[in-house]
Image 1 (cartoon, rainbow, N blue to C red):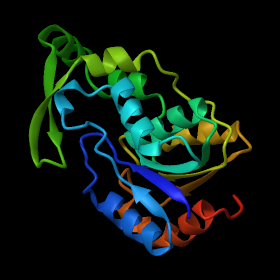
Image 2 (image 1 turned 135 degrees about the vertical axis):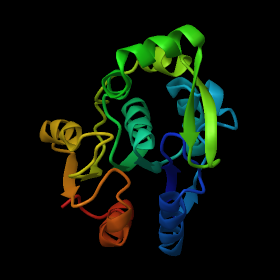
Image 3 (image 1 turned 180 degrees about the vertical axis):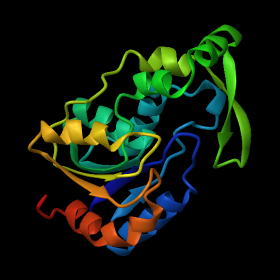
Image 4 (image 1 turned 45 degrees about the vertical axis):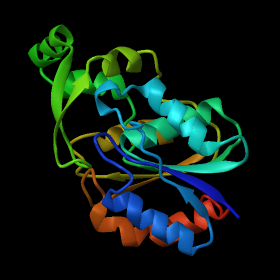
Length: 212
């Protein structure tokens, strides 16, 4: 039976719409699916390193496939590049160039204020409220590569109208790697309107089907 770990996005949770949808879909197909809380109950102290430790606990030591959304997709790529036991990946709008994208997305003044005060509030979709986040996230993220060089087969889906993580990032990544197939969808960052469209391909691929 296939083991799959689904990794949610930034300021999200295992109860997100995509996490619940794909967990149900993959379990119905016979897989065992884990959907860990990447913040481990402490969103304020969230870091890439801490989340990778959560992924490691959920993945265990045996063969496993990873599916991740946005930041979760970036984490899946980072983890797979360091763990050859990962068999396959499905990445939904993966947040490549994670550290640099923050600096591009937020004004310089906002980044500096965040650094000086130590925390900034962000809306947490899983909690339904604003929550503080420590600047340590950016400091830690700077140690990680923009484009993790994993070698496992991967399907990547990215919205053509994504205004959070540009689809150009996934194009750049997939264009240089024969192991990755990219589909650019008529969607935004959340890809919610194409979940049913991509579901059969995701299920078949994670079951061991060809990359296409």
